[in-house]
Image 1 (cartoon, helix red, strand yellow):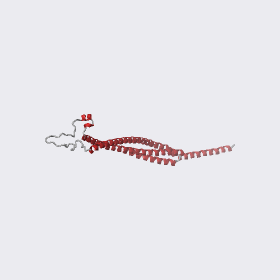
Image 2 (cartoon, one colour):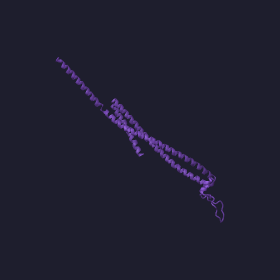
Image 3 (cartoon, one colour):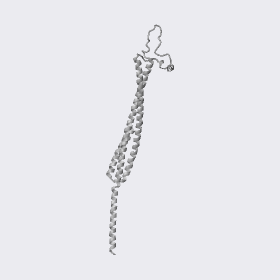
Image 4 (cartoon, helix red, strand yellow):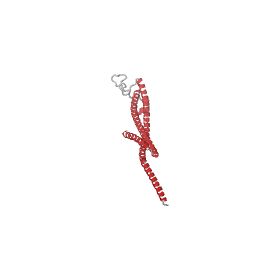
Length: 235
């Protein structure tokens, strides 16, 4: 009977030692994996940049497409004015080839024959007013007047062409700038999403080097995001 307590005491000591070893092991594991508590923080931080970058990329690509459509409309107007310019030019050159002079030019006011002591009538301008001319149609206009109108229309169309061309080129440039910014934001979002995925893998597998690598990838995405955002502010 006196030996039984000694056996129980020995077993109790062994049990206590085992528990202490397990506690030490758990403490060592907890200390070794203490970095995992920061994984969620870095993942949330990266997710914020990914969300903002995705919104910016979507807005920029939509704006770029709208600007490109606007530029296409301007180019269509430009081509239409070019066609009108061509038609008016053909009509004007046709009259010039026939020897017609524009109404109001010195040649058009030259007298056809000299008459002593009598004023010569001005045959370059018709006697009807503008309303009568519109009602009478093109037949009421002299060749010189039509030539002058054609030349005036050519000048007007060419002025419009220059304005439309400038606007179209400017709009295309804005569209290209927005598309470049969209691509930068898209690249930043891609890198940040890769970083988030690597952080999840690191947390599940408890691989600290993978987590550190994910931080580096995420930082590269944030740098691209910052450069794109600054470029947008100065655009």
